[in-house]
Image 1 (cartoon, rainbow, N blue to C red):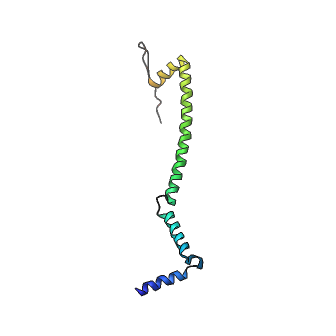
Image 2: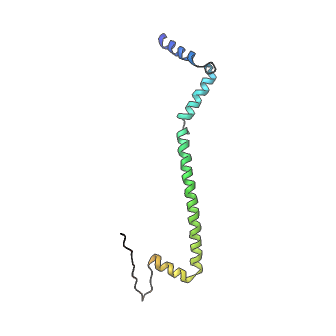
Image 3: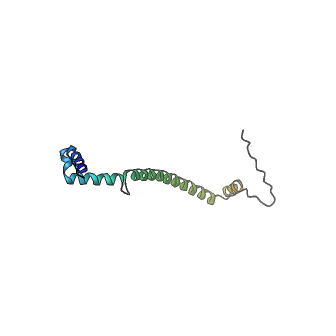
Length: 108
């Protein structure tokens, strides 16, 4: 046992003088614990910030899509001819006495 204690004592004396204080050692242990082992360690914080940036980009995209959709809705509700055109093109709606032919471009 004495051999192990001597080794620890030698390591302790190799530390710089300001770190030999028990308060500074406790502080370093606390900082190390918070940095690497805590639930909010550096890695988790970095991942959360990256995910937040992605979500903010998506939020901007969705806001622009909502605005574009609102404009389309306003146009469709204000113009009956445009509403009919939209229904025919988008949902292939037709009148009873009409036939629909859908032309699809071939990809090469």
